[in-house]
Length: 297
Length: 303
Ligand SMILES: Nc1ncnc2c1ncn2[C@@H]1O[C@H](COP(=O)(O)OP(=O)(O)O)[C@@H](O)[C@H]1O
Ligand SMILES: [Mg+2]
Image (tube, rainbow over all chains, first blue to last red; front, side):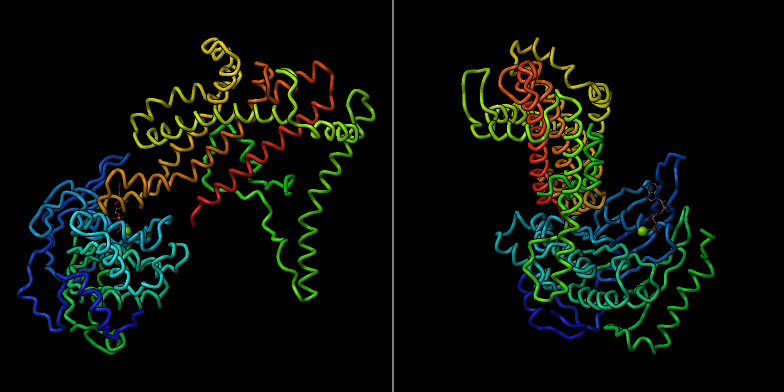
């Protein structure tokens, strides 16, 4: 089991062996040479057909995301965060506008975009190993032997510190562990972009903090581009490079984008005394509770 | 045996046994108190276990005793109806040689039970072979659902025995006609429950399928089938229940070997003891079938 913050070289070796393309990011990462506009969202609008007629959930969404960037989507519930994430995932197709990932149009789900669902969405009749293996198989079955796919599955579970639970069924493990299996499943496909919809929303505060730290570490190790929906201001500031703040629906759009330039790796305890951290936090809170105060729901 | 102690929920379920019930929950009929635990050392724990045991045992035994008591009383007042003791003696004699065979109209009770079970097995098996795949397709394709919905709602409420003349007409023989009646009455719960199960698959699972880009075959084997299985088991359970209800009536009409025919035969012989025994046998076999399926269903419940 991996501990928070302890650099585990043995684990890195396992991961390096099974994810040969993967480079571990040095902490002083220079962003200039990373691909800009890795994810491009241009003038996207989403209209749902409902019984009461068309419902405009999102309008005029414009967002460019760099490779390796960590983006949080924050906003009041019902404003359209999940809708936006599902659009990037390719689960829904925008009514208007263009969406590109790595220069190609997003026309449906694809293995380069891994999704972590809010309620883990593990299949209860499969063990943790089998749940992850289902994803591995789908991406690598053509090119790889079953032995190497097995190794990949185990490496993904090792990455989230769950090697000991691979033969357990979802109902036999805790909520935090389930969420980690969900993350492992998404990571095992070696996605370029990791999409997460309130991944820690249902967890208790301690487990959530632990998983946030793990996620920061994994995102740094795998250099993933991450888009995460959250409603937790501290989580957004702690994890993100930029925080995308959305206005209230209907017809929600991006209200403001806050760049968080806190150095990485970030330590939650050190940040507690960091005035800049509180400044960012204050800015998000101000947006959410003064300028986008939810009309009495 | 906890035979006389079905949970309230299971009663509710079977009384609504026309196939519309689609609960995926697997109801546990047996009482959950474990009486076979090793004898605890502490006296207090022992007395607790004993108390639990009596609480588990006393109500059903009391119920059965009252039932037999009322039966005995009624048989006192009505001389035609044999009492419990007389029936018991007759049953002992009957079951001492269950597998004799004296020609097609006089066979042991064992043969009659087996003949009925065989008909139910064939009719139910065919109903499952057609009804379950059909249910999957109806659940998966909206068009097919809309297409079959009026037919199903029209035919489902028809009393099973109304199909018997059609069977006799088409098959021109009693045995296939009886099997046909079982088939047609057992097929609806399986179609309906399977289709409902497919409809109720959580969107989350389908999203997983989409995000992982699973093939149709993987979607079927890894998501659809396991997710629908509990619903399917409910359908199968209801179907077997209906089939077993119907077989006695069908055999009364078609004749041959089988419990239903046997009841009719004993009625003609005015052997009322045997009719009462037949009622018990039908009840007990039905209960055993149900218990078997409950056990099977338990194996397929996750969470
Ligand atoms: N499939 C859909 N059909 C109709 N309306 C939808 C659909 N999905 C989402 N909506 C509506 O779009 C709005 C945004 O929803 P959602 O993206 O789930 O919000 P959030 O994730 O920010 O809480 C809500 O008003 C919701 O009712
Ligand atoms: Mg949401």
